[in-house]
Image 1 (cartoon, rainbow, N blue to C red):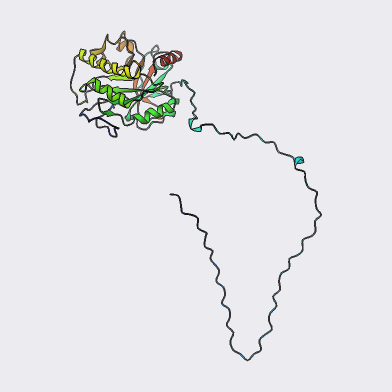
Image 2 (image 1 turned 60 degrees about the horizontal axis):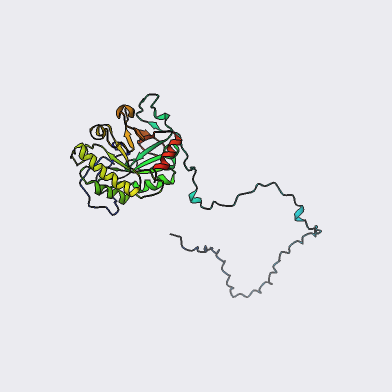
Length: 342
């Protein structure tokens, strides 16, 4: 994707079991020792005088007086006190039973929806009818470019779901994917993974790469194929619209067979206009529209997710982050998740 959460770069390090790298450049982004007894300094003893030979008679020995302790006065014995008659101060009971698994403790109730508390560095007036504030369920998409994320804090700011950059091309894995994947789930977000499609690799090997790196887990959101133009890519090939849709279909079919979920298509206005308008009607769409609402940018297209900002600001993230909404209320969100999630 074009902005913070939906970008990548070539040469991503730390891949696990990766295939041969391509030349692509995309925009998807000690315990101490035992105690020793202290040494006590002994005061020097005065030297005993050495007697000298003399004709004087030795003085009689000096008698040392021993101190005798003063006897303690006799105190009459007091009767024993009965403990049961002792007054006891009021006391509150203390809970001493620890949780069965304190590591599982979380402040987030399952399925709880947090209201939007995001800010925007470049806010857009979409009109009252389509203001993002009117939507009940907000989320984010992230990649390596967000760095270390405080996921619990991000959740309380209104991130109820997150799409996390996983792969692009046939040999690139986002170095933050595995960490973000685990941390988002631990914070109670609904999570999904997305793949940035590279037009100079076959669709089949890209699908295999995604499947190799993205776990199939219960409750995950459907996988996403991110299709857009990328002027920074080393791949300058421009396929025909028919060829583009053919490659997309191969990729999506393979993911659907593996995960049992119909993939979501993410796209941008220019790519949609040239290649996707009127096609893939049975697929859920995630549309980027940061200047005008989707109804004006993608007329007649139904959508599930709307990426309305690439300049979002939130506690828990340094820098900017992509902001998204789900099209529907809370009840419709839970219904869609129960139907579409793995």
